[in-house]
Image (cartoon, rainbow, N blue to C red; front, side, top):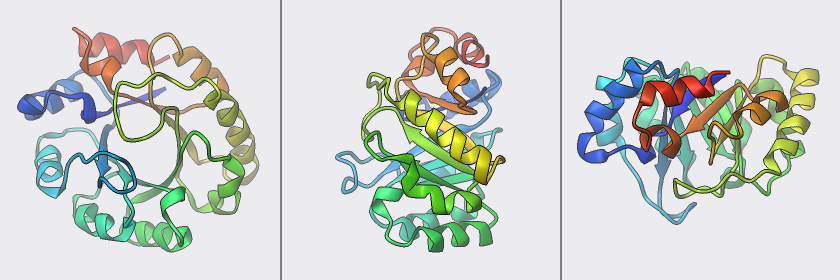
Length: 213
């Protein structure tokens, strides 16, 4: 299991130190939640902060866009060459266009599904994706409880991926901890996003290690 701590739960007064700490604690990716206050009822960080994160980070960036205008935000962050940029299928009328744009920029494209969105909506896109992110909470705020029905979605998606594009990874974001990590692994998840579980712990390395099963 790969672990991508979400900096949404970090101490922003000590953000540089927090980024260094999770990198030293053997995280695999740094998950950055970008919210515009329109697609979700919250606003987070923009290019100035993300640029600063990139300068400190020794691990690849995983940028999760929760925005209405994906093109605009991709243009803001593409120069950082993140490993992944993920965008919500619910916010995009032309997903193929966004996927091809990301590939042309040398960035791995990923699509995000909200808890209520069925996996079959992206079946026709799977062959072009490097990752699918399933939200296990409603997007917008950190610290929410895991929605168990997402496990069924993971299994459905895994079956589709095995048939269409076995190289496509599954990521889950929201309420991940040491109590549900085995169920996520068994269902077919490859990467977990963990915010509160890591950043609210006393030992980042121990928290991250407990998820790497």
